[in-house]
Length: 252
Image (cartoon, rainbow, N blue to C red; front, side, top):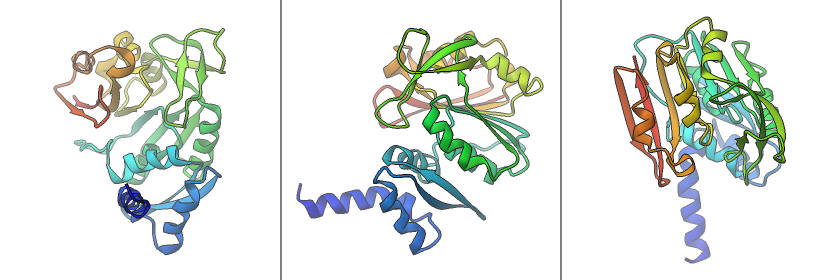
């Protein structure tokens, strides 16, 4: 492939995200953001304008998935009051939810330390968002988080002897209890930990709606099997481009 064609292909891939920036100045910032240096970018989400600190292509891919590809979009019968974002990364879905439902109380969890630092800065201007450095797992306790090649591929490990950063884990039942007995919307993208999270949960019926990424390629558990655990009246499974991955949406 010629260099010119490669540039055109790259520009076409990024354009659905870049066009959401409010004006030429903010569009130009995306070129700087790809360098890996911390950079502030701004996106339009409906009537809102949302600022993000990003540090590399991984963060930008997360923004593209949420704002351009709209991976976590779903229609709810009423505005949620309690939203939980597991694997919040730098806050792309968190801030998208905040713009869409400005009165919702949102709890955003991210275990990887450097990614969490950006999440905390990105959500600080939003009083209805609480960001905490916590993991989600099938069992509560101490885990180790290991950073992957980019901010989208961090993983949590159950063995304290593993190299990485220690982090406390909560179960889905713990989170339901913390939210007063009901979660109106649960979003998750936790790189394979969803298998044990869902299998061990006893209070899935207290989650009114959920949307999340399933990783059969990591867990070895068929995505359809995990979707079958959900006690919801409507469950949709949408294959994603990466083999073995799917997006699940469910409503009571």
